[in-house]
Length: 498
Image (cartoon, rainbow, N blue to C red; front, side, top):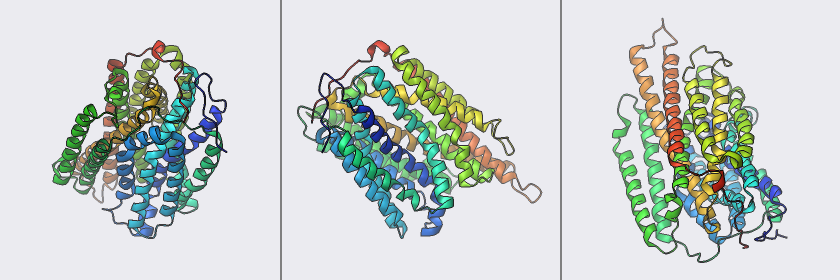
């Protein structure tokens, strides 16, 4: 028995139950990245993954996830959002099971690529379902508050859960934990979540799908190679890596051709009206910069806790929880404030809060007490993320025609993914360069055994500073580009039955 679709006039009565089900799978996707990151050392030892190939445990996922997002959004619009959601959840569970059973690095990399592919179906379908289920502006703000809290705080929770599973169970459970979550989500979604799909012409833009998928994948891969070059050769210039530059240029060229094609085809994969809208374009730019800046928090802060302070994975996970606390506080407040004051003030304030939080973390030292810098810095970062993600999600999707809901949500997630990839390359480059310079100025000696740790801290704090810069630019972009007020948020949006 499947749920009936909502009508045009009245909201779907079980929409909050549907949101709870959707939220679980969104959390599963967000958790997956950081759970696997915390388990990387254990995975590498068990499967004999070389240091050079270790990054593919992460990259195999980001390449397919980022590359297929736009196509996944259009599939959700045309094929049916519930159907796409169910297929994505089942596929993600099977891929996770395969990852937990991996006997060698090739099997693990294949499982991660499959996770990314099905995640690219599940992610846009989930966000599009939220958009079409909640037709009232106030209710939609609350629904996006749930999404914002998950998007902003889920990564820190993933560090904690990954630490517990790795330390007290086995790294394979970092994959297997997705299976029962996905099974429960599919069972409940089958009965509770209503189907919806775009009306009108639903032919697929095949040339656009090929161009944007290859373009995004090439771009993400190129920036990944830059980060890899920075880590492999701290003394050289990673931006001079020929392979990296080739893939980046190919990616940019393919995306330019993609834009040209989208202006010419009858039913484009990415309608340019979505991006060219000033408010939505500002939201997408902000999302890109926030995605880039976030890398400077969770990744480098986790390294600081474990490699400098010597925390165990579990302790490092607990030490990362203040971010989640800040996100939950801010997301709840933002859901109440968006309908009253509009999205722009919150996005500007959120960017500034997050920038100050990361800048605070740039003052971490070898013996800095946790309560003095790490705690307030993380709380400020979490508050900033909560105030940013809720109006960001709302602004990027509210006002979108129901025909384009999946595509609009896919663009939001795609730009965050590309931003994160670019941020990884840039911040890793800046960090490695700072470490190299610090070691040249103060080389480790038997009389100065802490020099290496001090150099590491120099690299991490440099990354925090640049990350704060990205978030500051995000705040400025929101202030300049976004003009929408609370009166521009529509009170309802038609939902067409599938």
